Image 1 (tube, each protein chain N blue to C red):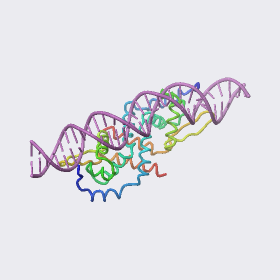
Image 2: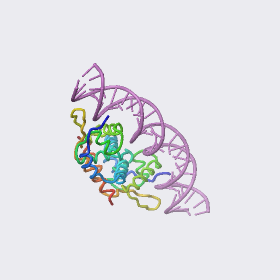
Image 3: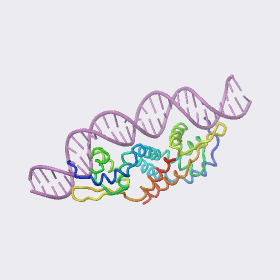
Image 4: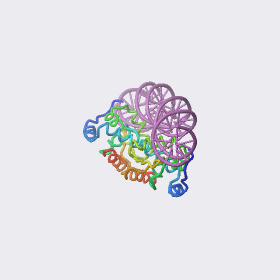
Length: 110
Length: 110
DNA sequence: GTATCATATGAACAAATGAACATATGTTAT
DNA sequence: ATAACATATGTTCATTTGTTCATATGATAC
């Protein structure tokens, strides 16, 4: 494999690439969407805020599993939480979540 | 952990959830975006179509690694390819890619 | 204080994943 | 046919990831 020439192409494209650090952050964000449990949680929160055990009941999974995933979603700033007594309610953090998932749905519906 | 009541909530939310199969497909789509090598490839293709070895050179990775990733991107229908002699050119398949990545970028820039 | 409920966290393990290496396939030119 | 190049694929290996289990924290009621 002796590589034909790409000098022009690389000059064009390399200049437009964001920093490695930004692209890494971006891929980390998408990998948070890349799990069906987390997608289900986000979709559930489209409707209304919910407490941890309600989500667990809805998805028929353990409270621990849900809590671990909510931690990831929180760190990615995709959900927020508020405490009310013993109960912690989670809600969608912003509308990027909706539009990203919406675009994804459009893509697979083709 | 003795679970307080959620019957109303679950009735509301459960009805709005897509099928498990759809949500799994959706999460699989996002997990394709969830790797920095693949994000870099997609970003490069924003500018212009490129052949495999040009991408490898741009990202300073082996041709094999790039080809494996392109296979995943092809199966997810995020890129298309056309052959011209020995060379295979890859290009963005559609504009969902741009808008998904764009929304992701907006989200992390806050 | 103790008891109970709701949530969070740490450790352990199985399953999935990305990259490297070697090799195979496909295309062109001679 | 052979040689050379571009891409694809199979295998191996190290790392990451999602879940379960056991335990810890936080909050309310008594």
